[in-house]
Structure formats: structure tokens, C-alpha cells
Image (cartoon, rainbow, N blue to C red):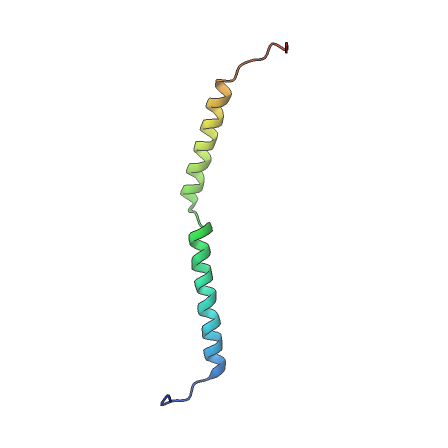
Length: 63
């Protein structure tokens, strides 16, 4: 066995803390985007919407 006794409360809490940190790291990879990435995507979305609106035909009202 181990040379020194371990505190089971500390071991349990350390294990729980490690599990939470692992889950947080996975969420950062899955959902995390930097502010730059978000703003760049928004700019591209706005630009494509503007180009699409500029190329839209006017309907004469006849169908």
C-alpha cells in the first residue's frame, strides 16, 4: 500500500475538479470562438446579404 495515508475527501474533490476541467476543455473546443472570429463571420454574413439584395429583381406586381 501507500506509505502515507490519503485524505479521501481531498482525493474525491480533486477527481471531481479534474473531471470538470476536462469537460470545460471539451466545451471550449466545441463551442468556443474568439471575438475576432465572431465579428469576421458577422461581416461576411452582412456583405453577402448586401450583395444578394443588390442583385434582387424588382417585381412588377404581375404574376
